Image (cartoon, rainbow, N blue to C red; front, side):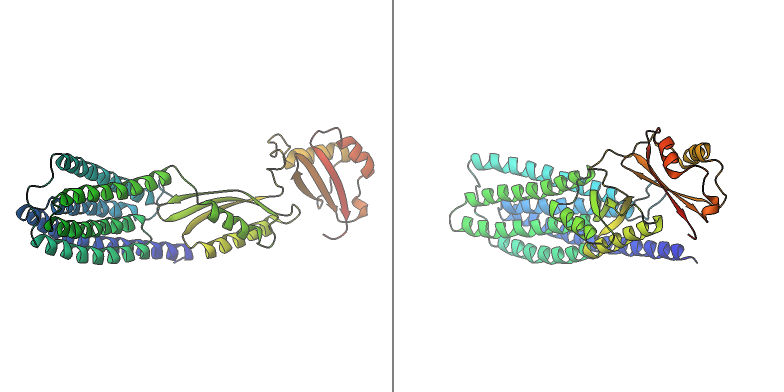
Length: 386
């Protein structure tokens, strides 16, 4: 088995392990959400707490989001294929967008309903002590599932799982609000129960908006922060052999980062040395940001932001050989021609084995004739072993 095949098998195994971990933590959270939702809705209805009922509906919205997560993770962790060479992580982004939209819709409905109830006069009954028990159980349970889910999300580098963890924590926050509002209502401030329901709904809307906006930014290829971009440019500039850096572009795909960068190197170096310099830049950048998935580097011989871009009308190697043959005669078979396309001119170097192969014309005469070509930059000739 080749190294590429082994790497592919290893990558597929990692994806399977990540899918299993994501599914396991999500199913555990979904079961917990369903149980807590039922407890809170029933307890809220029986013991006169509108805030606890809203909190229970919030828990049921967690069940819906868990179903979304299970469906999305099944597809987003597939290995790259011919139609999706960068992978399927954007499916995860769309899932996060859907999850955020669900939260906004649920929060808006609950907020509106309880605002109307608040202006209508508030609650008719004082919440009873079982409401406190249900809220306390919810706080402890949801904080535990939040920590567990977030740990798994960070381990498999999934923004969707981390987002689902924070969704669980909002349920814990809302249950804390239920605790304090219930205590306040029991000591005489009955309206606190309805106000708490509105606050909980606002929390749900806020979290939903954060998930939605972050997903939209990723889908429109928002780049890295200015701080991270500046750090990566410094890393590239500090790499031996790099003269300058420009056109550093970035985008995200799930938790992964994709980069495009232009590196300016000395024009006289070989293609292979330029490539090796680029590979060193890649290594240094990945040491700084571990979630960089792909870096596409372009090697430039000059800083084309300071000069006009190289014209597509410059002659090819064969066209230049034809021009030289026309002015210098047939070149010896062992003659080597090196071309440098710089500042929209062609600079040439001719290497001859010895002076016996020197062209009939003097270099100055050849240059004079070539000067009539708008693309001609310079000509140098070399003799001896090379």
